[in-house]
Length: 115
Length: 111
Image: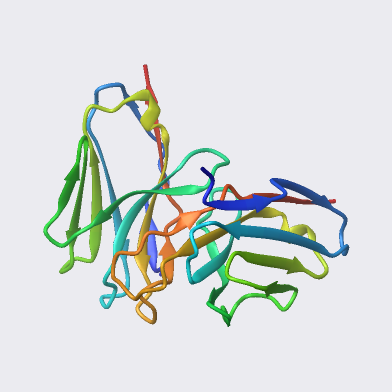
């Protein structure tokens, strides 16, 4: 059974055309993350939500925004995609209880192509 | 210096071989350590956590050396299905639930 679901799996957009990626989780976890991963690179954390509290990474461009309307859903909005934003976008969740060995559960990712 | 560093490989080994990967981390205050596996064009999945005393899960053994700030993963009796990228992951010192991923070490197991 899928626990972290991402839609769409593949997204093609045009340079400058806004795009929204979605993530849902059936785990009822408090924390949800968005990562960007480019080829042969490490996943890079963009931001995360702890419940409704939004936490932006200092180096995440303003072009990237996020919404979490409820526990289950989280959206990544790219306001004006550039060619450099082509990447795999990974959503992940983790139980929010502070613990030193929390596993992060990843969705299958959305591969974004910018034309 | 990167916060988590790994040899990108690829490590090309025959089936049945034993292979070891190392990873170094820069922040001595890190408390949580993991190995994740990522198949080509798929999401990362937890392979195993790494505990101070070292831990083993079947053919996989993970070790932590806090003094030297490195983590290792040993795979015995390699299978073709072990071919993947192995990501070394460390928690950030400012948050127990924010992780820093290494770029990964690619393993190719050949028949």
